[in-house]
Amino acid sequence: MRKITLLLALMGTATAQTTVEFWHTFGDPKRGGWIQDRADEFNKANPGLKVVPAYKGNDNDLISATILSARQGNAPAISQIFEGGSQLALDSGVFQPVSGIKNVDFSDYIKPVINFYTIGGKVNSLPFNSSSPVLYYNKDLMKKAGLDPKKPPTTFNGLLADCKKIEAAKIGATCFGMSVNGWFVENWMAEQGQTFSTGQLEFRRC
Image (cartoon, rainbow, N blue to C red; front, side, top):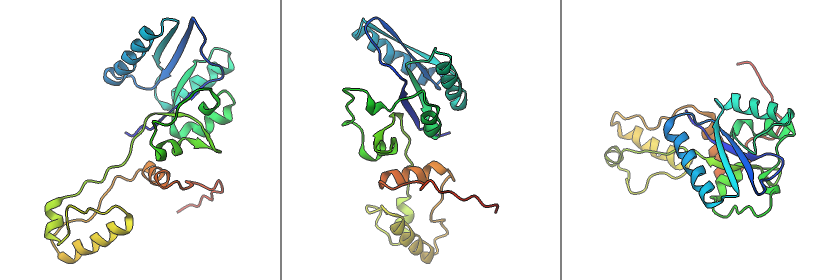
């Protein structure tokens, strides 16, 4: 299951001698342990601060708990929100864009990735872990179809052109297959710097 998650900083910043709660969705030992290790490293290097990671359930559980706790006046400093919850997080009024915090360096992020988390010209959140679809191809089958395996398609038009050649070669191979995930389209649009939605959606029964 894909998780592209967002780090949205809640209203307020850490000060000296402050405990910084970080709520996340990774309850398994491997990823949860990795988060705890990073927190321990940070705490050791910054004795005036203490980051306390806490697992808060799945995506929907976490965003609900975060909004509720904020409205009760007991919100965590940082919450890991899945990308589909970005607008809900903003509409709740309890989050502020990361770009509103001073001295945040976004230069290390790949432009298409940071674009994905930019809303209204503002960097809304920091990508905590970002997934991307990867194209695998069979070099032997490409050779059988008369294609150069050293030059795989890099665009959809190129992929379709190669598919026609594979079909014409009659080598008994299916040209292309993929898992039907909406986030594939989201990623492709982000990589091209394109708008995913105009905000004017029409739903029809098929």
